[in-house]
Image (tube, rainbow, N blue to C red; front, side):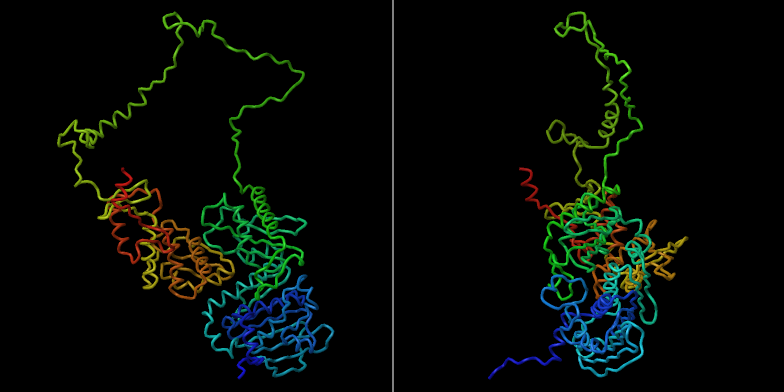
Length: 609
């Protein structure tokens, strides 16, 4: 009996849709890209319930005829490709002919579209790949597509959607990637009947500032290089504004966002001598290359591209970034202090020059003996003055410290000179960085900063969970302007920030006033700290509450923990060690850095052989 059957179209469409439509953000991406290909100048995006209930994209592009509107929802129906060669000279965003049929397979879709030459438009209603209605309708020029109840017929896929905050953040990420390459197009985002984003037509730098906030304007350094292989342009941040997270790092090729760890390495190579380890610059880098030299048809989401001249472009990018950093004085250079420099005379051919004079001692005889009359004068250095301070210190040390040398070598056996081991402190600070203490198995070394990070992290995590943070009101509230992406992510961590002791009031337009901060903070730069917490939350992208809370507690613990170079008293060291071993995990910091190491007695004995 044959067991292989041909899948029905309804099931095949749902399987294929899984490759293209993974979440509501995928629908937004595909619909907006279609609007861009239609030559629109204004795109309006309407979202309800983070895309679960409604995703609507309205444009004023060229629209479609009734026949084209119906054909657009057939699988592999596209206006972008006529033959196989067109796959290697793509200049449009959408080309597979899979987006609309994939969306229609897992949602309820309503399309209204009209061309400029048509008196009336077309209405098309599709539900689960089934066409329910098509009729003439009055509508403006352009296209409006509404996608309702995503995954209504695939409950297993709908169950795996993340929280509304996470899905909303994913939608905004896709919008960011699109608007950053289309500054000449106006975008409007409306969420749950509230306009949350409006980006008017602008230049590239202005579009970046519109998205990231006014503060980023002073951070940007322009890069540009035009070669026979293509053009590289955009902006990188100044080295002093590098951050721990990897937010705001974008590569675009022919107006298409891509992921490229390979090109990221080129940027980091240029920045390597200028920033600390673990820090990352922001960058917005654009490539314009011949469409025939790239292949975008290797990934369903089209975020990976194969380059024909990848290694050469890597070198061009690295050199371009390094050159721009040097041009804007970001690269440190030798600063000659000319204040005390002697004046160099200008050569004057009419002026007579004289022979330099050399002073000679006619009485000097290198072969003369010591008994002869000539004795060269020796400079006086007063070496005795250099030792005067040490002599006083030596007298003090001899009164307060045992003479170990005499006791070891048996030259003196008086009780006063014997080292009293019972009164020796159990803990010792080494170079204001490590705490040394003896244990049964040998010598334990504790990193003081990492140990304090571990202690504080557990403390703040407990405060967040129990909401017991103590807030201290500030005399002059600090105004914090967030980027659109940061403002989108802030609500998801607001409760946890308040649990730590932060008090924020919304001023509108992505601005917030910091009314209070945790009482542990001394002279806090609260806005920078809150931004780092938001960036960490965005970077993790986690929907698990405990993971988000950890991402908030860690930056605060790092900021408040005692720094390297701080001297600790014996009591402070004892307290820190006791608190460390009360932690659930005392060996490593929350991000996996080693806190404790132990040298056994055997290892120490081997070193001393």
